[in-house]
Image 1 (tube, rainbow over the protein chains, first blue to last red):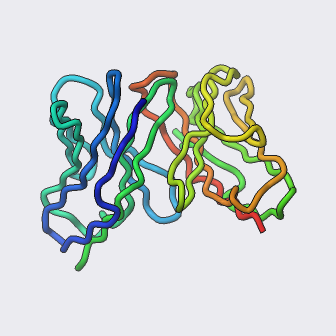
Image 2 (spheres, chains in turn blue, purple):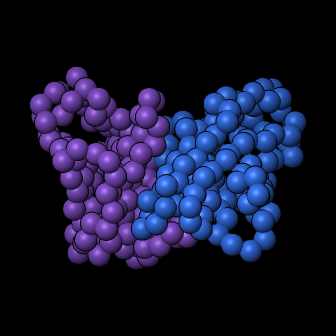
Length: 112
Length: 114
């Protein structure tokens, strides 16, 4: 069975500071990992995905994530956040046949 | 290329009624998945259709059903609505079916059950 744990439900951070949103997964099979962002009253937008290959994945809007198999983690990072990054972020694993299993989400609030 | 569209965007129903939500995938996409998002349960997978066939189904009661048409458009239906069905229903499309295939999400339909 697969599961995803997002350790922080809320993360406040000052503008231009770095941020890390944590995600741990468990799976008995190969995993494909994703980070999505949801702005208020909108659907989900893909930030980045890990399928295979390099463990450091770069995504849109300056975000990146590192796949760590030994720690079963896929933490999302950004070196300098902007006000516009305020949103909810979801880590997800694909269990097959386009069935995404999502974490509970982390609300990132960027403080001016 | 137009994104995933969902209609209606907002819907208010009363308990016991039924509702149909519609999703038009990105042109050329053949896979459509549905998700329910609630504050308590988060994002949960409902079902996925590929080439008019339901390939996978989440853990929801039989009141939740769906279908896909030959043009890949999809509908989901909820019968005998309950207060707990109030949620944001998200549709996602992808080019093909597969674990590594990116899903593109629509803006969702917000259903309120009174």
